[in-house]
Image: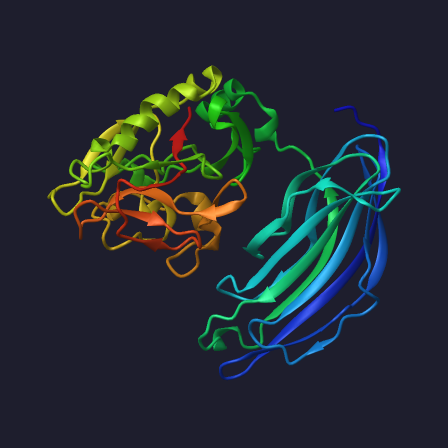
Length: 407
């Protein structure tokens, strides 16, 4: 894409939510704290961000389940396509347990006629856990993206006293999308840097697109970069050691097994064969060339008595690689570790919104490789909310989102 230096005019309106929480209800007092114009030099078309819901929002005595709404317009007034992130320019979020949520619809409009002009991608409900609300949004010249945003204090239907006195405040803005070094480097360069330990420019959560042919294009993200001493323990799975990439979303739906059992565990499943053969062969050659063999330890099901060890090109995650300490029904949970990405995000069995993955635009269930030791014919899987559950019939098709190591 051709670039030229332009100026983004950001018409920023901030709002503050202060939580004052009682015995079993949370109360908010909110107001706009300022309204200012900020300039930023970028290298794509000219963008403007404006608010239209009035000069002030004041809300008192909000209880869990109540919301604050905001409508913003992002316009490209330049002559070139622009790519931007919708962000929290400033963010203070002391509310724990992923109870502050944001979602929104997006309407694509013609800047001249103000008529609808196609569609733009909505913001799916998600916990406010980072400064980026939505990234890598393309907007054409003379087009406006209208976002109707809703910020919600989640009602858990239980006492929420643990958030007493906590604060939430934010300033919305737009920012030019800038590719990370991981996204810009070739796979060969990345592998060379990994082998030489030169990975300081690669950060957990950085993504890169992979073309899987008939399965479409999907992002992989950096899920792990460290190799702690426990990785050298005899019998320890290498699936969360070293430079690990996992798919950011669900790439397809498929059954774990053709038969209704979990005999033989992950390496004995039909999904294992598919992932390490059919799926692997869909990868671009330059990526396949740098994927390394990984020693993978997997749990056993109710009809087996010992865990399984396999050598994989591609593998599904185990419960302890996602949720801290894993799930009791995962017999191999002590033979692997939580991936750095999920550890950094503070993922536990009680804090799991980061684990949500989508099939297209919809959150969906997805498999782990952990057979449930409590049942025969059951694998622990991730729900559409990011929590864990079992059993599920292994012949049912649900999401597949594997991982692999490079070096």
